[in-house]
Length: 123
Image (spheres, rainbow, N blue to C red):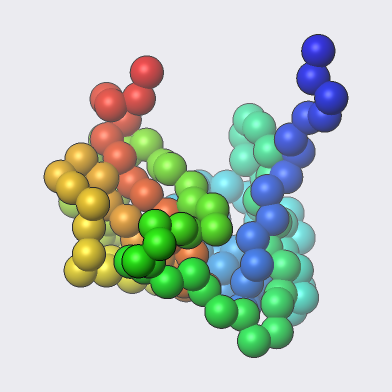
């Protein structure tokens, strides 16, 4: 029996309004609440995504010589290159350093790494 249920994942943000618009575009989720200090998105199934303002936010380094990212989201897509291009158009950055052929690491507008991988690779 579970002790708790995950209802929301909250990311530190340098600009919650900007990041809410970005993640709403990438995930196709509804922005349920937005203000300068905090924003929240609701997905169709599963936990919500929160974005909380952190003054002087410092994103994790990518690549990081220690291999740490603090956290990251893995997102399944059908076409890596097309999805990466759409994410960049929405405000992401595609770093030169990439881990391989079946993944694309991008950085959201606040600098958090997230990964795209082909949906066929997920079981």
